[in-house]
Length: 168
Image 1: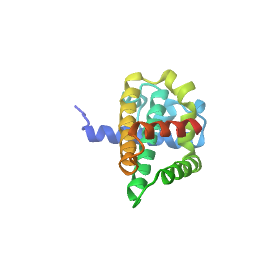
Image 2: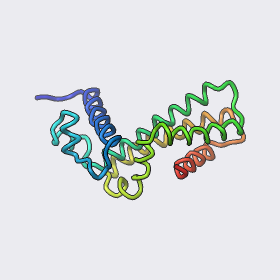
Image 3: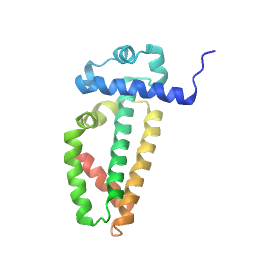
Image 4: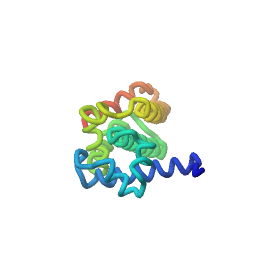
């Protein structure tokens, strides 16, 4: 029996996700097929479907994990600052909105597909699991800011991050 460990499964899922990300960097979503993702990732279509039951689920996962990485970066920036005022945070948020658009265009493109395409077909259970992880990261970001700016609550910071997403 050829059984993979959890670490091997995670590595395979990551390999598939990275492949899909790279394909999306150069192609429109509608042109990418699961067969192409499987072939480029070096896995069978059956293996691919063991991890992601449809293209929308795969790309929704990319979107949600991409935002988790972005939130990690923002948390690190906040924690690296000796002090943080409300004005500093607003400046940081505005600057990071620009940086996000300029340096993470693939994530921005995925975000544009979220409502009209990805949420319509993605596996709800898988999406909920990744949204819970993103929510936890969003809460960690809110906590990092609220600890430094007592006039802001975690909920208010979370709402500001939602506004940033809506702007993008």
